[in-house]
Image (cartoon, rainbow, N blue to C red; front, side, top):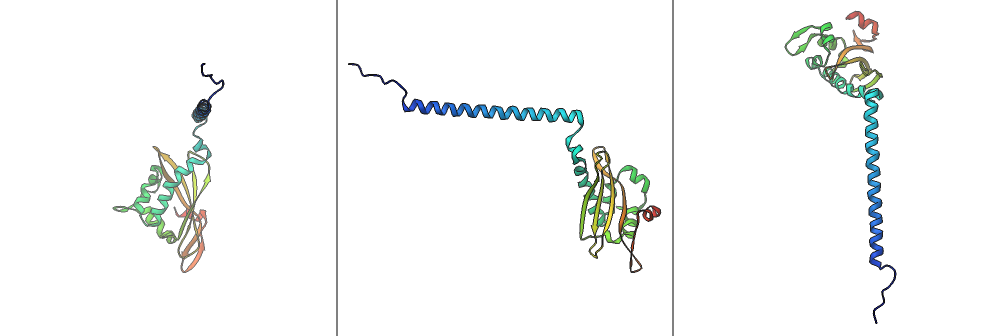
Length: 193
């Protein structure tokens, strides 16, 4: 007699079928994820070509401009007037060119003399004011170690891919004058320039 063949599957066959099904499911899921990522990337690229960079529209322009603005303010407050001057636009430099000597901008030396609270402040806070990718406006609130606050208004412009300060003014702040503090208005600052 011949040994009878068992009809049905052995345990090994069942395990192999299950492993094959799990592997096939994994490959299908990975393929779907890859297709979705490719589609999202293609849609993003298409939208950027049509509407401009999403980062710029949503506020990325200010974020990109904030770092050079912060560096400008830190250098100005540290008394590094030439370094601050180097972060200004060509138009700004043409409007305010004054040279005191090597490595020092006379304009910013005078600016720091007018606003002594800017030197070595306790804190510097920068906030975006206007969402315009071509010329972001930032406001810096500077708290001197002696107390009070000075608010600087900065306009920036992109020159050949580099953000530069195009205008700086004190729009609010405490100015020491003869031992008493005096509130300074924007119009007074404009008259001094």
